[in-house]
Length: 138
Length: 138
Length: 138
Image 1: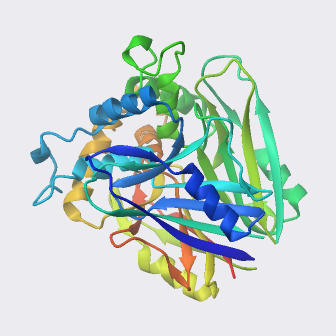
Image 2: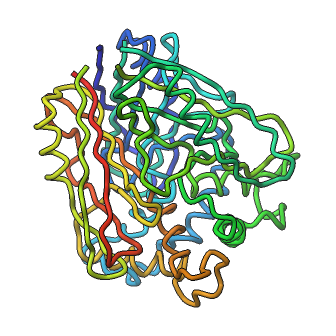
């Protein structure tokens, strides 16, 4: 069995933002030499997500509005977690969007559907944060 | 290490619907010859889900009502993604229900709890779409 | 390839509650002898979750309030699933929090970010229920 571990680092300049990491994950798969296996990609922070969806600007704006409706940032005082912090909403948004994606590797490639793209979703940015890639297989 | 890749195809006749795929996933596990390992089952489309819950008709109706409340289809004009499309809500519903399920394989069988059933969740149907099964193990 | 299967049992005394299981999952990884691989941890019940977030009391209270807003328990009669049952809301809360976590194993340890903690999330407690740990790797 082969395995590879790799970290991706981000510094999203705003509080929230989505970064397409599909090609970086594919690079790691290629580097691993794994032809058949599984790739785990997860946020290492609990106010961020890794998720798979469309790379379409309008949709990302829709997600921003929708997540803000389901788990509003303001007023920050509505959350008990916000004692010396203001990111409780980010912990909720990340639950909806998910911590991780598990992706099949087939013939050395990420086995994605035609529109599937892998994103790092930031909900409390403006600082350095990481995602983890772990690949196992043969 | 053994591995198997298989696609399941669907054409759900309505916009939304849930299809129990538990026995098809078990068939793939049996075909793979894997006794101990992991099975990934994921929607290959970004307006569909694979999730695990109860095969109970009332609950599925509750999900329909609940998802429509959290991410309404109408008015379609409320979403920026809906330019020449009307499925933005489906991209949101799928985030709540999830893209994938990872299931243990133990002694050649899906290692599921007593009521766990695997579903393909369609949120933008009336066309051919796919789910992916990838099994690895020994 | 090595593998290990283990069940964790819970009896949460209230309807809802979160139990930190990080050290128990690490114990299973150590017991497995796996140095590089993947760990799946999933609820075996469809009214419970396994998720990763912060072990912070204020945040857990925020989750309680937030989930109750998104999928209220009362009135129980609003759900068609609640025929002789009253747990339909628990099936919804679990979809938001997720069924499972997949965690990398690196050098024999759970490869978690600095604040990542693994929780069993109960939404219909006061009875014995289980989570499953499945570890594969080498």
